[in-house]
Length: 394
Image (cartoon, rainbow, N blue to C red; front, side, top):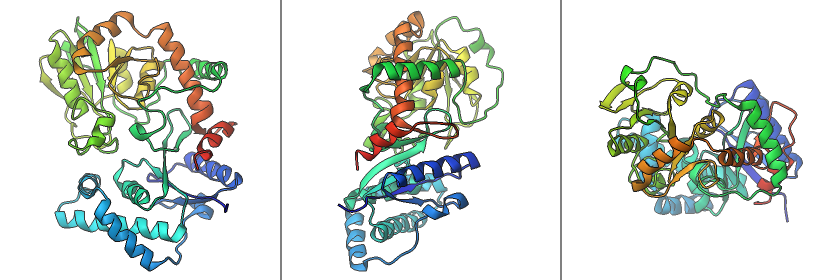
């Protein structure tokens, strides 16, 4: 069997520390006997030795996969996401960019002949088309993204978010004592700290929200576009939002379910369509301010798939997952399995808080993420187990 080839894609510009971390990971994969290439629209000088190089490819095979892809790919979904991501103004622009991405992907894969394409957030428009084309061409796919803990990357054999190895499902711990020990150290280090990647303003809350006597509920929104919740009519949305078409609608459902609830909806800062701070109804506001300040205000936090789930638990607040989420089915949160359970779950979460059992389950999850799942950089780290897990799927 020949040397396995993987292509790792990257959408964002990386800081020097992140770039060094990416180089560390690429080298570690290379040292495991893989042929590794880096694919990005941005210039990363430190990573040039891994950059995809132009080359010759079989044009007959290229044409075959082009027509096959145009027949099988979910064109409307990707055009809709490309339109939003790039602020396209016409159907013609959507059509041109979509066809360009399909051709780019087929040319890349016909040239490099990878065994796996590791896509930076396969839900996101820039490389998501490439990911689906890889599926059509019979190439294995995985996912990479910002990590769930400081100075880490996600390296997942299935994808990211709802398509990943860990979202929406329980996790089996190979060594429970080890993960609890590692996770307890992480918990003690990050307790009451923020894991948010975004610097956001802190402003006074509306007086009515400050004075609220009933349950105070914070709903943290997801990045609608890059979390596969757009288009809302597509089945992908149900991976993180099984009962509602958006996190805004989810917040409204909580507010309408019980007038004694005080609900604040905090939109995700990326691809945000709720940029105005407004009062929606008597007991609900949309506020674009520091989420950690709002977590401190809340009695209960609702979140479905944001990394902020971890910030909520680090701050010791009870977390509700409505049918999906990062920590869903892992014993760390209150879980809603049907919309009619939402009111009762708020009461239960407010009364019981973040329980000792949930805290212990959270520590185990943290240890698993650190030791077996995430790729760590910027420190002396042993990534053997996480690299082993990933490579075993090739």
